[in-house]
Amino acid sequence: MKVEILTPKGLELEIEAKIVIAPALGGEISILENHVPIISVLKAGKLTIKTSDKDITREIEGGILEFEKGKMVILSKRF
Amino acid sequence: MELKEIRRKIESVSNIRKLTGALETLSALKMKKSQKFVMDSRPFAQKVGHLLQHLEPVLKAQKDVFLRQDEVKKILAVVIASDRGFCGPFNQNVARLADAKIKKLKEEGEVEIFSVGKKSTANFKKKKEKIGKSFFGIGDYGEIEEVKPISDYIIRAFIEREYQKVYIIWTDFLSTFSQKPRMIQLLPLDGESLKEFFKGAIEEKHVAEPLVEPSLGIVAREIIPQLVEYLIYQCILESNASEHSARMVAMRNASDNAKKRVSELMLDYNKARQEMITREVTEISSAKEVLE
Image 1 (cartoon, each protein chain N blue to C red):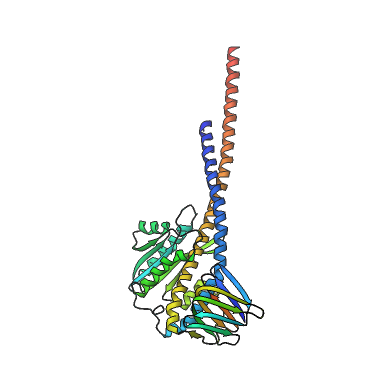
Image 2 (cartoon, rainbow over the protein chains, first blue to last red; image 1 turned 60 degrees about the vertical axis):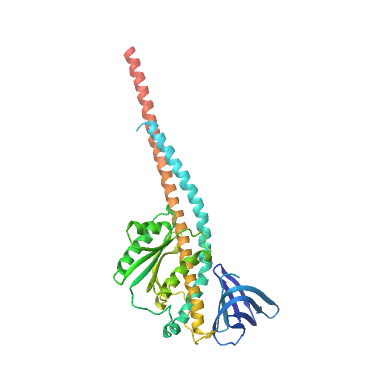
């Protein structure tokens, strides 16, 4: 799936990922390619994006995650 | 005109030119940076609008506090202008639109103003409008934290039902030479005005109802204030870019005018000097003739 991370400063990251593990309000959620469409609130915590060859882990300050039709967009103040 | 007088005029016009030239360079720099800011944040704001539109029908059905329209008693109009002048018709354009719109809004209910920017406050003070709150001192390339006091106030006042409707008036940045003041209904959130805000830049309709985590109520409470904050932030960035562009253009025009004026005055000066020399020569030669 395509993952985009957007902040008010622009598009910070655009990558093909296999799994995204995000700190949702109710606890960590993992999202794979064929997940149902979802909108979720993220709290401050660790965001992990696993691609075919590497893992990217970053601290985020919270935000909003939207996943639909094989495309994920994460809105955050900073990345 | 006296030679001395013309010379003094030339001097003062060239001083003005130096000033406007310096301001032009300065605002050109600021313009470039604030334009970059506004362009960078547009995809983000569009996504925000997209999300809001996505959630709107579901939340409306739930009579969410941010979407419910109560009986209108008091309306808040947020008007964004600049802190400083010297920016051509920028502030007047905002004021003109605000005046027209506020007059119309008064038919619906009592209108209070939230003025952002010193020039905005000054305008409404002069017209004796009721100013509920005013705010100034947002940096040229405002960070989102700077906008927080504004959005916090608006959201809190709306939740406590101090106002039943909130409008925002700002200047949309189109290009360096063209900026347009606009107004939308900010709260209660409304799909139509969101569409208006993004001028149709929002993506196509969704196929499926999304799963909302952890629950719709929490999402609404968490997300909507954030999204509203981002919208206000975007309005301020747009206004900032517009302000600096308007100032740059105004200063360039002023410099050009000053340049033209100096060359006109130079002509006058040379003419006057020539006249004086001719007069002196005639005087000397006629005096000589008389002596002979």
